[in-house]
Image (cartoon, rainbow over all chains, first blue to last red; front, side, top):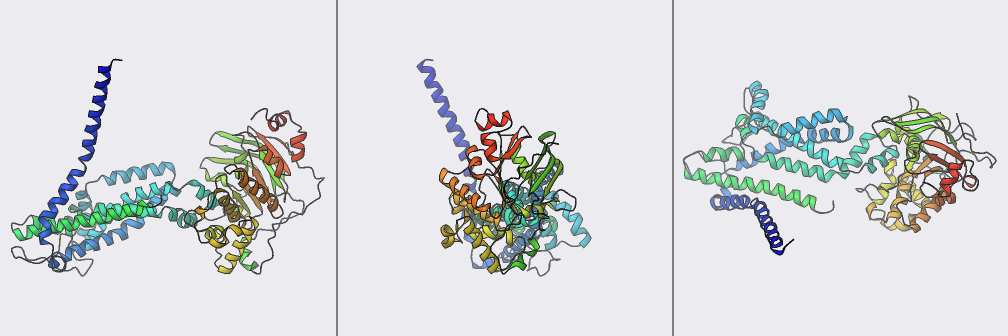
Length: 279
Length: 292
């Protein structure tokens, strides 16, 4: 092998390393751009009123997104009440009980559901909940987001439960501890951090969903006082304000987007903190 | 049927369930207390034509033997000979593997443990187990690990739990090493200490038999000798069946030895006889290191 050939190879190798590195770095670019742009456009409208006042009538200045911020938190809570228990227990079934044949079908269904476009979830819940109730409502919004959480949480819970070494299941069985107690007190306790991480990631995923909310709870200018009334939410308010021809509302939409992004980032950071120490 | 009974020339020790020092809290133990064995000479285990299959593969072939109570019985044999499977069939642990099934009969102090009305969970309360890899629960403290078998079986009283934990930790000679840090995580202990902790966890529920699956094979020589001393101590209170790869260990600690090969029980006799004057050529070849 002659020297020229060798240096050509070295050059090619270095070039390809640079190309792959560049592609990987491109992941960071959109995030940096989004943050920069939102800060530039939105931070000016973030003030005390934004967090405490109800939305202003389109065309008038002032007002805020207080009911949308609280509404999003309420919807996330409602969705968790539905999605967390069903998702976690489903994951327990897949990991601890299920027969491999049934499991294959459940996993397949969950993976398909994870890929269903969110607007279709909105249509489904519109047919199943909104139409029979004759009204769009906070409840319908919570249900659609909760349903979207189930397959996400189920799969992550299953995976972290399967990571618990079998030695612990055997040790518990050898002590004459019943299977359910073993699962709750030993297996789930060991996997708790992973389960919580999965729940938080699912919350981060659905926090910004807009299309399903357009079908189920398309905003509310005022505070929501009942589960059967529509509730406002950050994604919907952003969507609504950004379509208006008034500068003041458009600026508030940017501010709302910034708050939503900070909320999702906060959830992701807490996932980081949770998974950092010990395994 | 090739039933191999251990010769009975030894003094006929009474087969009783292990006696802990008397406790004023016997009432709390009552739900766990197993039925008293029928006769003094009843073997702890008696297997007849035991066969175990994993799917289509037959791992154990017609094993019949009687395991004497209050003695140490060693199971030896080359890898894959079925000795672990045999051990696990004694407390129905092999059933945790989905394709496992068994034929034949196993009696624990005379009671058929595979009969329809017997729950595997109850069998495992009477027959404890220690594993090759020490496996204290990582989310629990030292004390919580020792008492977990009692707590998750319904014993609540702090006094009872602490008392029984202390007694068990004394029995495994771990008390002095951990008494000042009972609330430290169990995984902070050394490997040998963790294994003794697992033995304490197994005996605190007062099983009648203790199964040990190569309990010292992952430990250094000093920790190993501590475990061996412990086994000789525990013999007074429990019937012990131990699987081991280490022939010297079997010779040092066991009263009886069973040699398994390719799923068959080749020979079962007093340990001294197996190691000095075995009846079978295969046994001799194995214990002298000519194969396996």
